[in-house]
Amino acid sequence: MNNTVYVGNKGVMNYVLAVITQFNTENADKVRIKARGRAISRAVDVEEMVRNRFLPDIKVEEINLGTDKVKNEDGKDVNISTIEIVLSK
Amino acid sequence: MNNTVYVGNKGVMNYVLAVITQFNTENADKVRIKARGRAISRAVDVEEMVRNRFLPDIKVEEINLGTDKVKNEDGKDVNISTIEIVLSK
Image (cartoon, rainbow over all chains, first blue to last red; front, side, top):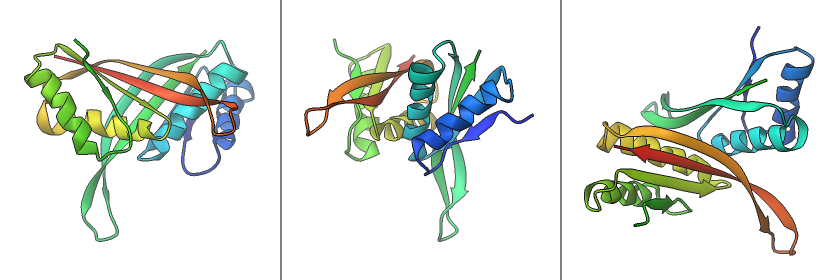
């Protein structure tokens, strides 16, 4: 079972609902919120909204920061920062 | 002594140099990188660049996520996400 929510450019509530669904409908014990680049700020918004407004008993178990290498449109390697926020019951 | 670097809208290297200066010139054992809202992504870029390119022995000691209430231009309270990344020698 894949309990990872990838945060991209959609509205925050899309990802908030995805996380809530994992915990409630899929009965997950852990959900990983992952994002890269500018979406990192939105990933933090998702975590804060889930915990402050919807699921106050959920804890932040772990936060991992990293760097991915991706190819830009010119085919050059560029570094992009990543975040993984692990939420648990 | 204030070892906090607030990350805003300037280029990443400004903040990277501020962190390096705290560790090297000011001889800090710990430096806190703080940011709010969209600058959160840039704060992660700063941490990754400091550790991957300049100071490989520095560790991420702690990462704290939170929410601040700020007034928007209409005088209404809005929530804004925050990050604090604590780096240590």
